[in-house]
Structure formats: structure tokens, C-alpha cells
Length: 297
Image (cartoon, rainbow, N blue to C red; front, side, top):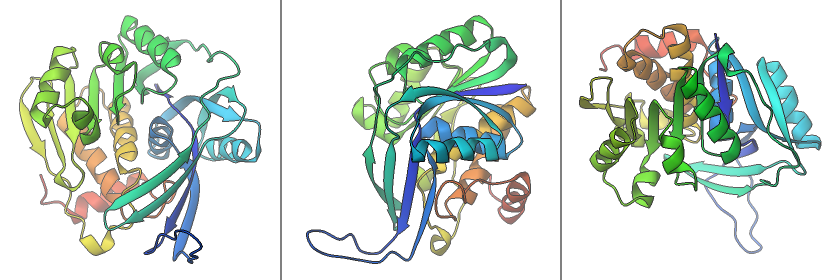
């Protein structure tokens, strides 16, 4: 079975530097990476890298960055269904000491309607809330067909409350809690009230507070990657989402703790690499992480 991802496309330029120039200052970065970016987009590439058959609906421009992105999708066997925009969106990312500063330029003025696909061919659909018309269309369609729906709640959007009414698995960021003035526990209660069967709040190196299929609340700690091996945390959450979708479509009857533990290994791999592409784990990479941190629960 296949997984559908709906979200916004970026080309990410990630630069490793200890100094942020201002004014007339100049600086030379230690390293850089150019890759695909975007929440659901990066999740789609992660799912594909882990063996999941993946379809992606995302905006793509007919410019050099758009051509680059189309080539990346073909390389990773992500079946791309583009929605036309005039210009590609771009992110500059500067990771430092476990955090990352991001500057973005985004084109959300769509030049055509979103592609219509037959959802009955999918086992799961994942959204990041961008392209709200497409997100709502496919969330409703997936719910009607009994297909698992997943949301990356990275921040509050105009359609967040409505979209959550059609979501089975919602994993949100601390930022959404702050925007909605909710504690982590309050957010879990809110997700339950919206009918989400599984919900969680990610807290970076603290891991994730979540509730499982029975409604039981627990903490899933992050894997203890040594501080000196943490290079770039940007995209770790996106990789987490893509990995649990890949795990789900392979073993839909497994408990969600197993899907999330698998995804936790994928995130631990990502933070040790600069940029999204370098941070995509293979199945062998996941096995190495599982072996290294075998004692973690």
C-alpha cells in the first residue's frame, strides 16, 4: 500500500557556522547542504527512503529550484503530483547548539487547482496543514474511506481546528501549545476532544508526551545522542513523522509505541547529519541506532 503526503515544498540551504554576519560583516561557513525541505515533504522523502511507496502533493514552480526538486523526487522514487506556483520557496537554515535559525521566502499563490487522486489506493495520508483546500479535501476523503490520517502540527494555521476533526494521529510541536496557550497535558486533552485516536507533543531532546490507542498518557524519551554528535536538529521532527508513517503502512496492526520507537531512531539519525537529505536514514541505519541505544525504552 501507498502513503499520501500533502504539504508545502522548500529548497533548504543549511549552513554550519558559529557566526551570524550582520551589517557589512562577512563570514565563511564550515559546511553546507542543499536539499528538499518542508514538513510533509521531508516526511514523504523519509518514508520513501525507508521503503514506503510514497505520493506527494506539493507546490512546484517551473524554475531552476523547481527542476531541482523534481529531480530529487524522482531520485527517491517519490511520486510527485505538483501544484503550480510562479516561484519556488526557499529556506536558509543555520543550526547551532541544538537550535536552528530559519529565514524563509514562500510562494503560496497557486496558479491552478490541486490534483485529484483516488484515495482508495492509500493506506495512510499525512498533512502539515499547508495548502488548506487540498488538506481538507484529502482528510475528509481519507476519513470516508477508513484510511489513517496523520497531522504534523508544527504551528497554528487557519484550518488547524477543522482539520483536526479528521485526524487519527496528531503529533504537534511545543510551538502549537504556546500559540494555543495550552500546557502539554492540556494539548493532549484537546486532541482527545477532537477525536484523535493517538496524540503527542514533541519536546526536542526531552522526547514526546503522548497518549496511545487506549488513551493512556506516557513520556517517550528521546534517544540520548551525545551532545558532540548533534549537528543539525532541523527536520528531525519531519523525519519522525515520515518514519512512523513508513512503519505503519508496513505493519498497520502493530501498537503505536512500536511505530514511535522506530521513528525515534530515525530522528536520532537525522540530528547527526547536516541537511535533510544526508539525514534520511535507511533501514540499516535504523537498525544501527536501535542496537546502539538498545537499553533505551
